[in-house]
Length: 75
Image: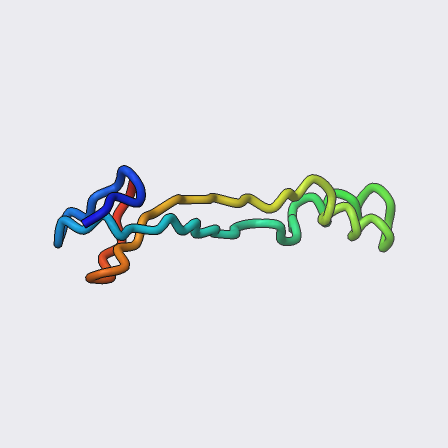
Protein backbone atom coordinates (compact mmCIF):
# COMPACT_ATOMS: atom_id res chain seq x y z
CA UNK A 1 0.00 0.00 0.00
CA UNK A 2 1.46 3.37 -1.02
CA UNK A 3 1.60 6.26 1.42
CA UNK A 4 -0.26 9.36 0.22
CA UNK A 5 0.42 11.50 3.31
CA UNK A 6 1.83 11.18 6.81
CA UNK A 7 -1.48 10.56 8.61
CA UNK A 8 -2.44 7.05 9.56
CA UNK A 9 -5.96 6.16 10.67
CA UNK A 10 -6.02 5.15 14.35
CA UNK A 11 -8.90 2.73 13.71
CA UNK A 12 -7.86 0.73 10.64
CA UNK A 13 -4.25 1.84 10.03
CA UNK A 14 -4.89 3.05 6.48
CA UNK A 15 -2.94 5.98 5.00
CA UNK A 16 -5.95 6.95 2.83
CA UNK A 17 -6.77 10.03 4.99
CA UNK A 18 -7.95 13.43 3.76
CA UNK A 19 -7.98 16.77 5.63
CA UNK A 20 -11.26 18.61 6.26
CA UNK A 21 -11.91 21.91 8.04
CA UNK A 22 -15.02 22.63 10.15
CA UNK A 23 -16.01 26.21 10.94
CA UNK A 24 -18.26 27.22 13.85
CA UNK A 25 -19.93 30.63 13.91
CA UNK A 26 -20.94 32.34 17.16
CA UNK A 27 -21.99 35.86 18.09
CA UNK A 28 -22.65 38.87 15.96
CA UNK A 29 -26.07 39.67 17.48
CA UNK A 30 -27.64 42.78 18.95
CA UNK A 31 -26.27 44.22 22.23
CA UNK A 32 -29.34 45.11 24.32
CA UNK A 33 -27.36 47.06 26.93
CA UNK A 34 -25.64 49.18 24.27
CA UNK A 35 -28.97 49.79 22.56
CA UNK A 36 -30.63 50.95 25.79
CA UNK A 37 -27.71 53.26 26.61
CA UNK A 38 -27.86 54.71 23.12
CA UNK A 39 -31.61 55.23 23.48
CA UNK A 40 -31.12 57.12 26.73
CA UNK A 41 -28.44 59.36 25.22
CA UNK A 42 -29.58 59.83 21.61
CA UNK A 43 -33.27 58.93 21.66
CA UNK A 44 -34.89 56.44 19.28
CA UNK A 45 -32.00 56.61 16.78
CA UNK A 46 -29.68 55.49 19.60
CA UNK A 47 -31.19 52.00 19.51
CA UNK A 48 -28.86 51.38 16.56
CA UNK A 49 -25.93 51.61 18.99
CA UNK A 50 -26.73 48.04 19.99
CA UNK A 51 -25.26 46.89 16.69
CA UNK A 52 -21.92 48.62 17.30
CA UNK A 53 -18.90 46.59 18.29
CA UNK A 54 -20.37 43.12 17.85
CA UNK A 55 -17.97 41.00 15.87
CA UNK A 56 -18.85 37.46 14.90
CA UNK A 57 -16.50 34.80 16.22
CA UNK A 58 -15.30 32.02 13.99
CA UNK A 59 -13.62 28.87 15.22
CA UNK A 60 -11.93 26.57 12.75
CA UNK A 61 -10.84 23.02 13.46
CA UNK A 62 -8.96 20.72 11.13
CA UNK A 63 -9.65 16.99 11.08
CA UNK A 64 -8.63 14.04 8.96
CA UNK A 65 -11.17 11.59 7.55
CA UNK A 66 -10.18 8.06 6.64
CA UNK A 67 -11.27 7.13 3.13
CA UNK A 68 -11.34 3.43 4.01
CA UNK A 69 -13.39 3.27 7.22
CA UNK A 70 -14.80 6.82 7.56
CA UNK A 71 -13.26 7.54 10.97
CA UNK A 72 -12.83 11.28 11.73
CA UNK A 73 -9.89 12.21 13.96
CA UNK A 74 -7.90 15.28 15.00
CA UNK A 75 -4.43 15.99 13.71
